[in-house]
Image 1 (tube, protein in one colour):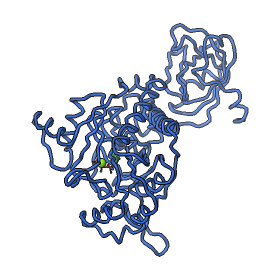
Image 2 (tube, protein in one colour):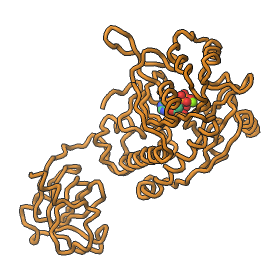
Image 3 (cartoon, protein in one colour):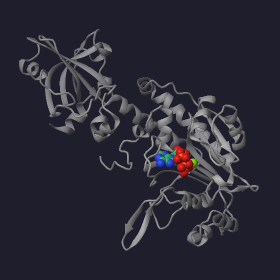
Image 4 (cartoon, helix red, strand yellow):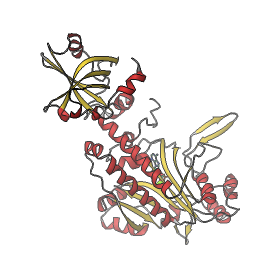
Length: 433
Ligand code: ATP
Ligand code: MG
């Protein structure tokens, strides 16, 4: 097969229309379905754009081709040439009468997973065969939407004048002082995989004002939950001369922009997934107000964090709303979040559709205060010398957020496991594919 020639000749099936009636076209894709009615044989060919019915008729279709049509295993990759004919009964009102069929890659059978739209195969097994699961329309719909989400976030941030940055994934010491880091060997040293690009985005913001990244993070959380991965992606943003309310505004507008883009570009995918997506509005409340509201609804609260149940309730009370919970207790935020008075902080969480999608806040840009906060959190300022020193030379007040890409995809598309929202998940038990 001359693939160069094929890529020039080939038509995507969604571009094969009635205006091609009587013309010869070349299409390529996978055998999605087949039916043998004795005198008539059908193949439904699927490519990235859609589906096309290919019809063979005994006595009319060349015998060799007709015979072949009865024996191509489903999900095999094929190239088909044929004449387009009008067919009111076929999807799209047209079908293809084949004159040539090339099998480029035969799918072995039985297939290890059910690749129908409503696959009966359980998620772990589908993930074992993710390469085949990606043949499914539902799976493709999720990742097309996620792709639009990422484009939308980038487009918004670039439009706001932010620069896109890349940060190192190997770090010499913990950025957050947490214990949930993966260790790695780096020559004769012990290093860690980054759990956030916090320090780096702050340094860039303090010089270049607005910076964003789509950054991979690793967290060695031992528990397997439906909302945590050990490797995930974050939409990061950091901005100088800004407080947490500026950061919340950027978060809200970036998400609204991206959702609008998804609604415009992915209506077919949303319909397939049965999701009615609305551009979210915003609501702001203090942590205290949020907990009072939750108590009124008899939901369990906790002094320094929202409970999972609390997040869920906020999603029920405010559907299609990004709920910003700010004035967060200082105790419940990391050391680099700016204090607000004695007990509160300039930190916030964003809750959307019943789950935390982001944490953010104004950061501490004052070396003395940073040292004090590190000590208060039981950390040794000596371990953070270069971080603290980076604020000694004209670092302005600044704020930002980190928003989970897969977490956001999960809540937006109402998926019941975050693993559905990542092509190749890394969790405690999964390292392949
Ligand atoms: P959670 O309380 O939901 O575990 P977190 O507060 O520990 O999240 P942050 O450090 O605030 O997480 O990270 C920012 C965002 O990144 C979160 O709001 C969430 O959207 C996402 N996120 C955090 N941890 C994970 C994870 N293990 N897997 C996938 N996404 C994550
Ligand atoms: Mg958080």
